[in-house]
Length: 472
Image (cartoon, rainbow, N blue to C red; front, side):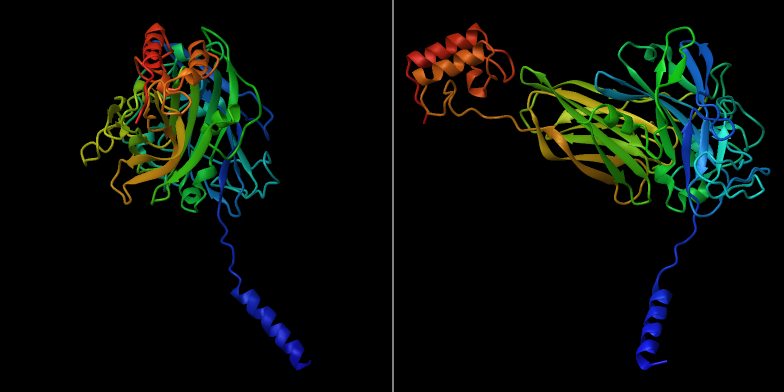
């Protein structure tokens, strides 16, 4: 063998030895929502349990798939904690507002089956793991029913650190309430079967080896459903499961003007920020923001949007999702402060005594923040999400659309920028007065920008015109 051949072989061996070896890891996703049966034979598995006290209860089938490169632990022996917990949520899109209207306690997994919904299953021969390429179905009835101990039972969300997948056992509390709603996905009947509204279910899996392998961001899927009226509020799928993304993506799917942005905390938890600005006409704009906490244990404590001095803000709103069945988290609405240069919503700050009771924006929930303003949106504003638990950095930021600083009129009545109120301004004023063109700030002579021109504006304009006003 020649020297050159030896050199080539040595070089190739060096490259092979230097190449990193990919670590085999599990990766669980929700391959089918409302899907159960042998390899997805039931595509419409949503259980309506009935109503109690104005609350409707659902549970939705979830079929999980391991799309990773190693088996996913699914141990159901005694109080072993190495199995998934399953969260179910319901959302509504109505009048441009995407809101979280219902959530469940958590189904604790037990005994994984090895089926082929998502891929060819590498059957492991044991239900203590979900093999590579394998799927496991949980029926709607099973996701809404308890078992014994920590395996198969319905447990509280507050016991789970969704960033790491770690949870406690025995549970810190048992569900309280009555059939048919206890522990299940609960929704106020007043939020259901509304004409023109769109509805979505979401399923999410959280488990230790998936989360700690860095694969916790894609363990959630959503599906649109129709909801028929009282008394059963029947939910029927309208399309396939949209996999590996949280339900806030349904907002963007229905409205391409919605912008979605990820916000990651230093511990590996993720929030999704969505926003949409709508021109209401008459010089007014609606600002709609939603933040979904996918899996951040740090949670959210405050949300702030820049609002420059002089901007008039109205119709301020906040929306969250009720906890229930004895869950320890509070449902107290966040307070709002308008002043200085921002509008800020906030709940209590963290202390060792309120770490579980405060209504922080916790994993698996979505909160809304909204208002109207009398100035149009500008890009590049900084939205700030303050974190609840004490980690560094203590807040996350993202660039969004927010209200612009109000315009300042240097020469009232001068509508052609000539510094003089004269005959050249008359046609512009008439067009604004009769609604043929947008009302400029220098035409608003008796009130705030955005108020339609009226006879008082006309009288003021004529007076300026007659006097031949000249601005410096």
